Length: 265
Image (cartoon, rainbow, N blue to C red; front, side, top):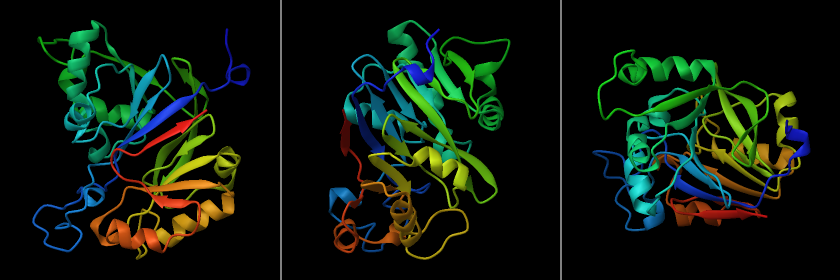
């Protein structure tokens, strides 16, 4: 049996499918300078990433924009879905995985902790019903916890972070760490991030927030963990214009944007 310790992460490519907060950017009915900006980097779908090796591909979270995110990039193959937590802006697109069922001829592998599983079964009860009707998604649910595991040939290290009082799973793939929807990371979990070459971390806005890192807080976490390259995601229109905010960021820290790709060898 292969073990996590015996496996190295293959070269992977990470694509940012969305970098916005739960409302997306532009926000419905808002006329601020960010929401009316003509800059493509100020257009943000809900936060999600695509992780690919030469043989394996999966998404972290299925947002309400999941269908469009797949169409926008022309994704024809998807092996799995990995969930961070049960909030609607991270699970709402699960139904659209059925398209991959049609063409692959097999169930979608879904990885979630018990808290998220409860929400999936509640929100998508018809998927898990004993009496199924044609055309619903075919799901193979895999329960995960703090233990490392593999999706295909890609090793996954879960990292527990706090979204106010809700435990959320961040993940490390090789030397790439992805943290979304958090405002606190305990020291034991920070140890799992240390040594990463690249880190993604959420920063909602400049002003302090009850359950998300602010920009200054996120920057401080990156500095404390000494990660050389970091990208900010889960951004609201309150953070400001992409180009203007970018000018004030310290070296090694950038705002992520939809479509950005990062390769890890």
